Length: 67
Image (cartoon, rainbow, N blue to C red; front, side):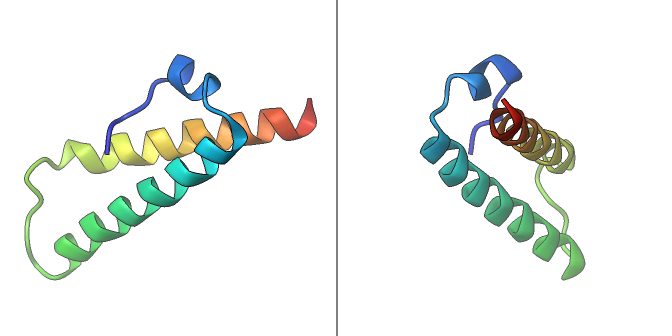
């Protein structure tokens, strides 16, 4: 899945935010599963970027809830 920047996340609708959040979390779980099984991911920095993208999406969801 693509890594989204803040300006990209702001353009998503509420439904798209929910869908992307689910996909990002599933991808993160898959990467963690590979690492915990003793394997190595192709790109270790991708885990960090996934976590940051999830945080961006959550921040936008919270901003919309309070606004």
